[in-house]
Length: 436
Ligand code: DSN
Image 1 (cartoon, rainbow, N blue to C red):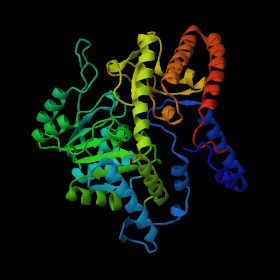
Image 2: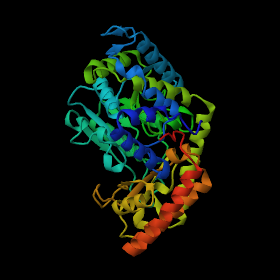
Image 3: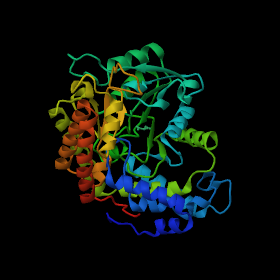
Image 4: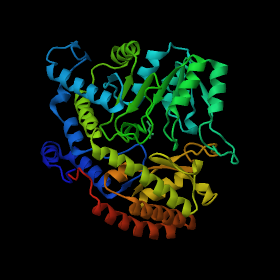
């Protein structure tokens, strides 16, 4: 991967609109000099970003390849077909819609294709690791549909403590007979047993929808089991572990469902697709088909496990006892009962370590405060961090949080030192798009 993209994009922007260029350059500098641990973020390659900045943005291409509502779509047909083919090859499925602007819109299309308004679906609630589009009351999924929720095991003595309770999935499906059983999560560190979910869906007469947004890169490379052939519909984002541009995909092996999904996306939800982003998706999917991408995903998991192990050694509790994938939930109260996710996120940001506060299972605190942090390894692994660097990151996290607990003076002193060390480390591992 080249370490320096040509500066032409920033040069053009600087010349045309210095005000915007200054803000973009500041963001490039922020990304360059901080350690990104948000599990849903990544650093897209220069090629992905180049494709997103092309003339493909200039065209309306409502419809699908060969069936557009505008003339002049020849090359847009070609790029969309290429993206579809790469998505199908990567995930091993027969139909791929590459037009969703986001993961939430991919989920909306999956819902429209599989349910009527008012239908019941079963999912994991947001506070246990689900997503707002999995049935939150003020989201379309909770407004137009009837969500019922299965649970995690909450029993410290149980070997599956804080993991999916498949008996609860079965019981909820038996009681409510949902039209859709939804699996796939935003804050779940363990392997998802798609075959088991399908068995339960079949028993209940439900369709299985898997939202694999977080683990798509792991799935694409065989580092996490695939939802195919078990799920009827698979949705994902393209910008998390998959390391593409911001956007979504919806995939299926069922021809009838694929027609319904296409209709749901356009004209059901969206108008013109973002064809520059479709082009960037094609590039990212091409990258994901390489051997290097598999090595990258294996390192993501190794790095996440190393970070989790090192934080445990510093006295933090990793929910469910560890991680099988790219992320972990850190229970801060095991280190100190007073420590909150809100404080930890703010203190760490001061030192150049970017995280997000996150509820832990059965969290007594509100989502704006929380008792946990969600940490992930996709972005740090992209910039070349290995296990030794992840152990250093764990040590910095502990130094900053311990200082914060001691008070403002100690926090200020430690923040300054750690910030400098973080900058040094970042300079040793430059981002692939160091163009500013
Ligand atoms: N907001 C995303 C995340 O951080 O997991 C989910 O869409």
